[in-house]
Amino acid sequence: MKTFPSTPSTRGFSLIEAIVSVGVLALAIPLVLGALVESGNSGTSASAETRSGWMVPTCLDELKAAADGKSSVFPATRSAPRFRQQAHCSASPSTPAASRSERWTRRLTRAA
Figure 1 (cartoon, rainbow, N blue to C red):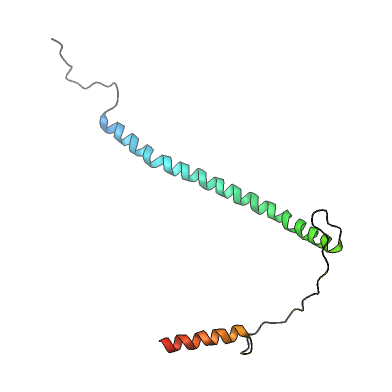
Figure 2: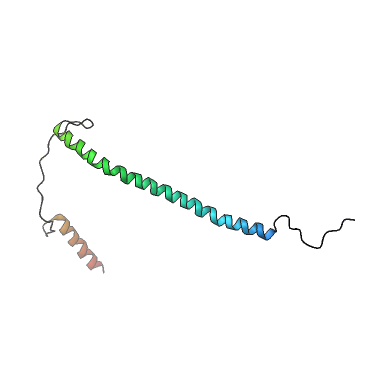
């Protein structure tokens, strides 16, 4: 008959050690993958911001060239009248937006 030694064997891992290691991996893997996704998003955002720095002036130059009939991308545009710039924008009761907001205010105060 075979007898087993009374002292535990030092070969292998116990069940508790295996469960703890699986738990640590279950917590670490989502954190690492989340960090990778976030770094990819920030890299994409940084490259978009870098590109916008030269895209906007280039597009504006093309639009100005189209107004002169010299654009290589856009068809020639006819010149439009310039809008006059106002020093400030005030909402007087004669404007439709102001009268509309006054009507809503009256409706709300009547409903309350």
